[in-house]
Length: 377
Image (cartoon, rainbow, N blue to C red; front, side, top):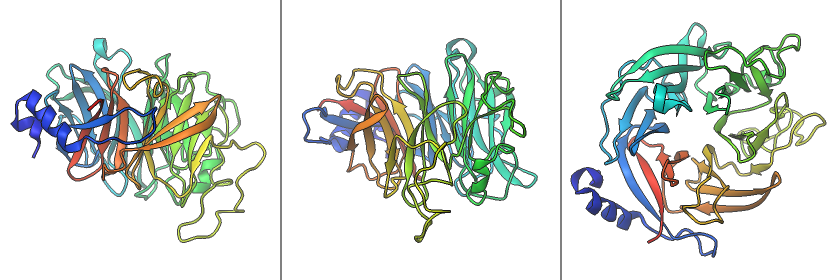
């Protein structure tokens, strides 16, 4: 039962906070925290985007997009959402609002697109109707090529750069992992596009023979978290195989190594390829986890709502071990990690900073929740 729907707003917040509040660390730098359930009853929610006035636009992997009201009420599924391949890890995945959303009400979202040969990651843009009930002016702006018969590794996180262009992360589709090292396909890549879907004119590999002009970086496995850092660069978190999850700071044109180098190994054991972790010309991760935490969702916290110690920290959700990781970097070097919310008992799929400066989480479950992390208590 969603307490926020059945009790007055103030009482509901207090009741839910009392149920879910707990200190997450004994260290002096970590504030006391409370988790508040904003909404529940979401089926495998994957991503969320603030649309103002306390409302969130949320995607559900089976193919639905809906608005969550400030009081936790779930809106009806939006009309106008395209068909998705809701198979395995695929479905309706990331969503963001345009930088000029307050004026143009544009959103950008990505999904597993069915088609000839199987499926692939696609990205579309649309206008959210004034009544928040439908998508209008839908435009398909990108389709990952080639489509393959796979249920795995779609990637599918979107970041909008300061100039309005769009970064999109693309998985290697699992059994096509060698494609991540070649430039004539979109598997295991990050692409950078103009809002209309054309390749960004400054893409670094556009003039290289055989390279697709939209490719921005290569050698990725399955990036399911992406955000612009305080340094203005694109940062990714990627799934390793069995070990070797990575945090990478993306530099245009660089090769991030998969599957030539990795800190992971084949499922069931045994090296991948030559079993090496470094090679000249291939980038090293700034952070890697072994065993794998199955990272998903990623945000740099800009606000000071939790105190100065947390400001400019990187937060990453763990699907496997069910906690929120706080990472501190100094000049590109990881100097600290805290594992927060160890009692949440839920797969954290997405983490975002709200307009109020607080952290919001999505839990990946058939009864998924939208949670708010509040200091104090």
